[in-house]
Length: 322
Image (tube, rainbow, N blue to C red):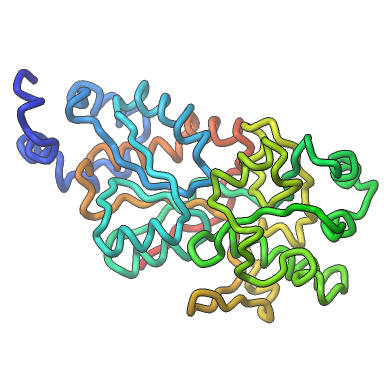
């Protein structure tokens, strides 16, 4: 298109009839979408803005970006941040993404209830683990804990151990590590476990942004941190898996623990399953590309990438609606 760079992307989309066509492509298989879109998605028209949970960074900016470019001719532009913060930015109109991919149902429902999307489709899930630094003086003990040969909680209670987590007000993982510890306290009958390991809910000595938590583990500045199972591998960081009854992988975690809740930031939260949901936003500048990307995420190519990066499939998780 000769004059493409002289026009805004939105003008180009309007002229080519892309806006408002997402629903027409929502049910097509990936190979038909690629075939149908391949001829008319060029570099100037194919920009796709995706706001996603910060925990997905290495995968989204690597193989997902490359796969979307190759298969769908989409120029992926990612925005990584805590899911709750992204949801609020979308609802407030501060950002105008094409696709939103948060972790846990809460942020997805925030966007749905605000009328910013019609549905949220489950695309993957994960579970909580404790990541640790190979440079930590406790590394050999964490390794033993990963093999079931030492009590993880005793290690985390060691004086001088430096533990990292994210902000429970803006990031689901910040709340999820607290829920994990609450469930661990119940399971181990250690009522004070949360206070001893995490301190106050907002503990400035432990709270960092999501990307810097992993960086601090790599440098040895932290000994251990909360993490999703998907995070340590790409950074060559080891982790200790957690028992299923406390790692938030279950579909019925809230039903199974109705007595567990957390009040923070003026809101009360309950445990949620660690499912990643994807939504095409109603005001998506590239609605057609967003619909194609959504279908691709559910197909074999993208699911293979998820699996390689230690994500689990969505299983029997169901879509969310406003």
